[in-house]
Amino acid sequence: MEEKGQRQGAFSRRVFLKKMAASLTVVSSFVSKVEGSGQGMMIENEFAIFAVDSNGRSIRLIDKRTGRNYCVTEPPNPFAIIRKQGKAYEVTRCSFDRNRLLLEFPQASITATVRVTAKNRYFVFEVESVSDEQIDELEFCALKVNMAKHINWTSGVVSDGEFACCLRVQDFRIGFNLVGGTSPFLSAVCFPKYQLLGAKVALVCCPFDQLRSVLKEVVVNEGMLYSPVGGPFALDAEETRGSYVFAVVSEANVDEWIKLCKKAGIALIHMIGWDSSYGHYQPRKDLFPSGLEGLREVVERIHAAGLKAGLHVHFGISPHDPYVTPAPHKHLKKDAVFVLAEPVDEKTTFIPTTKPPKGLDVVWAYISRGNVIQIGEELIQYTALSENPSGFAGCRRGVFGDETVSP
Image (cartoon, rainbow, N blue to C red):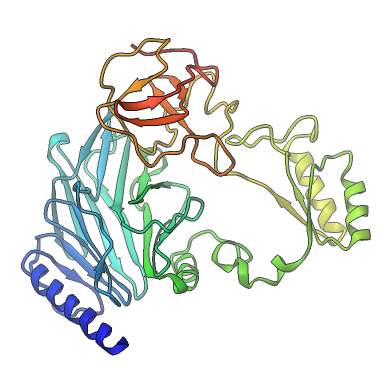
């Protein structure tokens, strides 16, 4: 049975390659022949085949072991989107030459070039040029996949338990989107403020049981910031096997915590509640009257005692952080964009949209993406998603103190 399955998988791949050869360029150390130059792109490595057509749509993500295509193509999924002056422009033309993907956005009169590299076990996409750097943002390496058994928001991983897909950004210049649901959507986002050129992202598509080993290669080989005791290395690190305590540590009580931990044989003091809000992460004045210098001194005292110090830093933003109130920051991350089906006023509790919202959180909870939408400079919290009629229900207006309502 296993041999038969392997033969069927190989046949499926041969058929796929034959059909795609007329319209796609192949770039890989595993495929020596290059065909269809300028008509889109297909890249291949040990585990996967990823393809973008001449219209700039992500159309294939093939698990080479089984020949299964995990890429969702209906509705069409653009590989890249540019946003400028509040409007979104999808790529509509795509060509490939000398390992570079040329993306055209005719409606915005903008072009962008992305360098593509097929490493043995992952792919790398790097922004090389954008004809107009006055854009709001560039979203690229976007694909929707039909694997949703496992979804991890913090690491950007989706999997069906057999095959896995992960988008890993290089540094602080790039963010990543992961929208859940039955067909999760992944993409990378970069901004002119943080320098568009050189923004790089790795796309990992591999067997689920090899995901950690591939991610280790990515962060090391691509020069990404990482901790040898965290991320994909965490399960292998001896330092993660010791005991630790969650503690509200301050300049005044640090010596008491040190004494207690040494007596109890606890190796690490993990500081929680040390910051005034997620987002700006400034030390609480009641705990650290000396500010960052006081926090530094506390850590040095813990180290001097032969213990380790940890800080809990969340990826979210607190409702009372300056990024949110009194007005939302213009660079707050958006998971999706919807169009109002009709005008609303400051008392409306149902926000009607032209298409049904799906795959979004409806609660505000730890490690969730939140249940907040933005209209103008107002943030609105919703409690339900509605398909008929289409929209956001159970809305609380101006929920974080931003009372300005756009017409």
